[in-house]
Length: 185
Image (cartoon, rainbow, N blue to C red; front, top):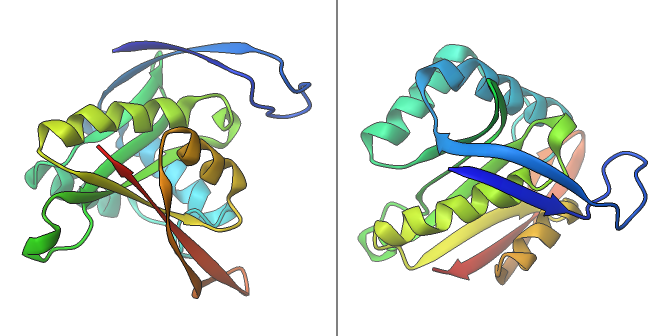
């Protein structure tokens, strides 16, 4: 799927309300994408609180994650600019108990130099129809309370606050609050 996205975000020193257009292809991830997915994942782990982990992954660990998603029928999408992976997104069960079978939690991560350019939004929007096709009713987002750009993007996509869990994570020698958002599909 070819997507052209116009944004008024403000990466770098560009003035607010400046418009850029990003052309990207959204498609299912394949094994050949895993090294770039790994690089994005490890940069996020190393430099942000988007993933509450301090240990980077190996290619084998990312491959096992990818294969488990595929084996269980969960999507993994990538945003592509030519041969470059700009970001990736996925969803899977929110909880494993039977009563939660119509609820999924998604994750979306974007390459550092492409954040704020509509890549994350486009990837999340591409997940909605896939979740509906699987009969899902609600999509959950778990976001660090200090990730204001991610919180803003999710609210623009129709996610509503579900609650905040105070000091449930720790990274970079500080306690982290986790905000749960939800969106009806």
